[in-house]
Length: 245
Ligand SMILES: Nc1ncnc2c1ncn2[C@@H]1O[C@H](COP(=O)(O)OP(=O)(O)O)[C@@H](O)[C@H]1O
Ligand SMILES: [Mg+2]
Image (cartoon, rainbow, N blue to C red; front, side, top):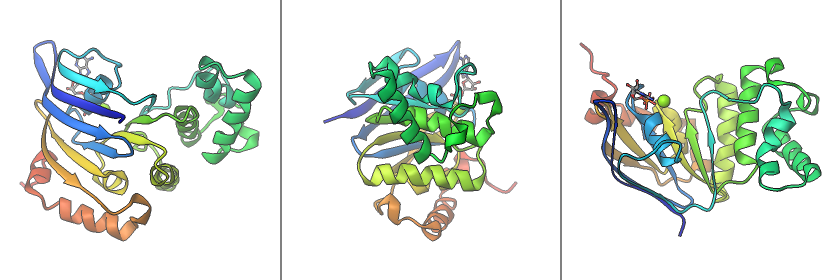
């Protein structure tokens, strides 16, 4: 069974401890979110899980057959057009150019890009379009595991919902597992089977919330209701420093 297992993970930058005793398992088909305030060590944790950074202490065991990463900023190659940005991974995986381009066009359309955008370069794209390209690039290889680092935070509410809906469709079809990092409780509630609350200084997990209602059945009312509920939780109030002074 494919899974990602994090055990007794600690991490420091210099003498500053950033993560302390992190433990969790992400099972196949699951969406696990790690939620916490900025500067709490979320990106560091995700980079350790995605093998973008070396583990100092503890272990990360990833048995998913493939994975990809979507960042907070789109990180597109400025000298490649939309379709060439999306098809890079396919070409690297040995696809013939013609097939790679065809696949890339299909997924670009699914992510709401239009044919007239295909030849454009990143400098001529809006922030929202760049993020569509970034998602398409991350998903074109149909990764078994997707790492998401606050990919919606710079987006307007309409686009955020649109991209989330595409992900929810993939989640419902059991096409993907996701490790999702965010400081936004509402988007975590919309997407997750499980939310781990990461408190800062140093980052450690203080609480776990589970949601069993299938993602495609969660409407705005569900998200608002659950958010209101969670916002009364003492650990949430402490972690996000929400207490009235
Ligand atoms: N490469 C690095 N070198 C030194 N300190 C870092 C480095 N990366 C992050 N940090 C520090 O580690 C802490 C956690 O950062 P980060 O993991 O980016 O948190 P988050 O994603 O939750 O905002 C911050 O105080 C940040 O300044
Ligand atoms: Mg971060």
